[in-house]
Length: 372
Image 1 (cartoon, helix red, strand yellow):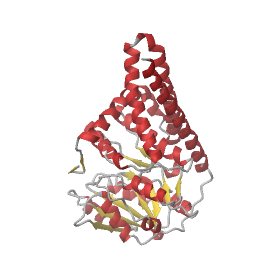
Image 2 (cartoon, one colour):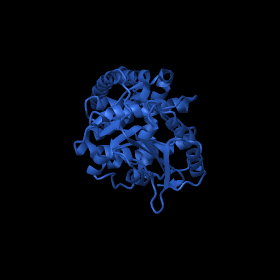
Image 3 (tube, rainbow, N blue to C red):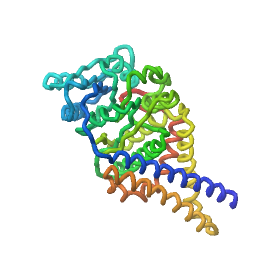
Image 4 (spheres, rainbow, N blue to C red):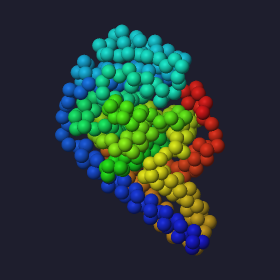
C-alpha cells in the first residue's frame, strides 16, 4: 500500500505544479489582453465557415457577421457547404439576397469532411488573413477589429477564446466546466509562448503561412483541422499569438442530449492518437492518469481505513488546484455560476474521462450523419 500511495503522491504533486504553471500563464496572457482596445479596420480578411446540416444555426452566425463594427468592404464571407441534406444552402442564399456583405456559398463535390471544406474555402479566399468559425457560433461585434489589430504585429496564427452559451441544467454546467478547463490549458500554456491547443471556432492565420507549412495534415480524422495545423505552425517556427479579451469571446452551443455530448467528445478524442507535440502529450497523459488514479483515491477513502487521511489529502490537493484554475477562468468568461457544480462534476469527471478514453479506442461514433 505504501508504494501505491507514493505513486499517487508523485502524480498528484506533478499535477499540482503543472496546473499551477497553467494558472500563472493564463494570468500573464489575461493581463496582456486587458490593454486598451484599439479599433483597426485596415486589414482585408476572408472568413470561412464550413457547414453541414446547420439550418438551425447558420442565420444567427451570419447575422453576427452582419453586426460587425468593421468596414464591409474589408472582409468577405465564404460559406462552404459540405453536402448538407437540410435547407442550409437555401437559407444562406436567402441571407445573401438581403445582405450588403460580400458572401459566397460554394459546395464540395467529390470531397467530404470539414477539413476539405476549409481547404476549398482557403483556395477561394481573396485575402491573406483567414478567419475561421463554426456555423453554431455567435461572433462579438469587435471580432474582426481584434483580428485586424493582432495581425498588424506580424502574427501568423491567432488563437481566440471560445465559450458555451449559458444554458440550464447539469449537462450544460458539465460542458461549461470542461470547456473552462480546456480554455485554461490553451491560454495558460500560450502565456509562456508554448501553444498546445486551439479551437477552429475562433482561429485566424495567414494564408501565406498556411501555404508555407503545406496546409492541413493528412490524418483521416473528422476533427483536428485546428490542432494539427497548430502543430505544423509550431514546428515550422511560425509566430503564434493569443488574445484574451472580453470583446473577442466567441460563443457556441452546448450539446443538449447526453448521447450527442458523448459523440462529440468521442470525435474530439479520436484525434489524440495523432498528437506529436510533446507538451500536449504530457498534459493529455497527466490529466488522464490523474483522473484514473482519482478513482482509486475515492475507493481508498471508502475502503482503506488506515490510510484515509492520506487519500483525503491527495483528493483535496487535486480539488484545490482545479478549483483555483476553474475559478480564475470562469471569472474571465463570466461563468462563475457554473462553479456551483464544481464538486458534483469533480466526482463524476474521472468516470467520464475513463469512459471516453476507452470508447475512443474501441468504438465508432457518428457526427453530422456520418459514421467514423
